[in-house]
Length: 223
Length: 149
Image (cartoon, rainbow over all chains, first blue to last red; front, side, top):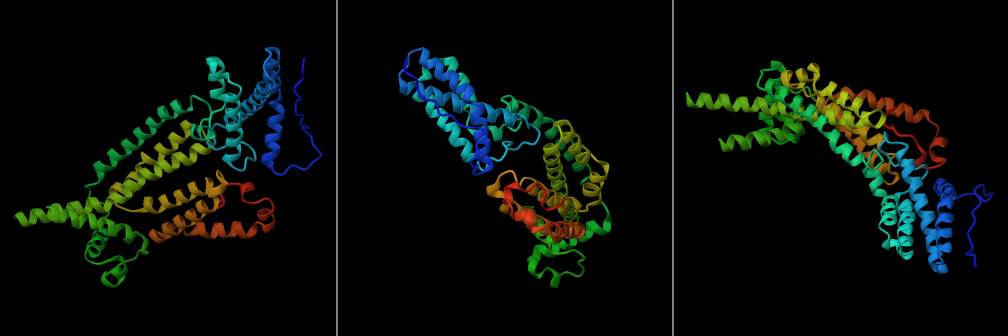
């Protein structure tokens, strides 16, 4: 029986690692060796060709790494962030997972539905990890579900406020805002302080009121 | 008579319109509070915080009844906080998000200067920190919340 050379990587290498990302990938790569060995031995026992055996080893390694990454994202479901320690960019992770995807097709495992389903889950593109903020596969459903309480709260807040909207309010403030809006209906904001009789606000809100004045004059034209 | 009633209705519309920005920003503030709290606490707590703001008699009174615009200016502060805590999520967008956060704070101060103390607070926290901890391993290593701790 011919043995396919297995690349060994020392976990505690004395060589300096280039970055935290490299260290992280080396660490999960080492853990994923179990997957790689299992896949490779399976292929060997089944009498696969050396190319195919190597492809299985690569598939095991990358899917094992994908599993680790998924696990680490899951371990931090609250923060809604890419929780992989030290991964500088999603592109790094994506490259690794794409490698696994390529390995899967190279190994020709498409025939087996169950295996494909597992790896399809393990080798999800990284953006899905980020989007599924809970980290796990049920997160999308959970998020769609919990969006409704927030919408209900906002709607209740909106209804209460709309009911109070026609009230006169604090007369000094509301009439000042009304007067400023009328001034801005006829004058651009950069002439506002010259044209208004009284203004005790900095200029920021007059930009907002300028928009309101635009809506008001459009409405006035319509009626 | 017709003229008077038209005037009445148009002034009614003006009053409604003048109160609208504060009302809309109330809801935006609630969403931002939800998003901020959700980063650090559970869904239920985040919803509770959003409800505490959106259904708070005080905030309802200030915006919808009184007609004041504090929710507009504080909305931009919340936006700045949201941008700054998200700044370290994606290193590529760190600078852009911090710049937008500062611009949001600047606009907030231009609407109502109540948030001006934040500026001095940020300036102080920046200057107190040594440059060494800044530059050693790049921005990606920095903790979030750099606009204001």
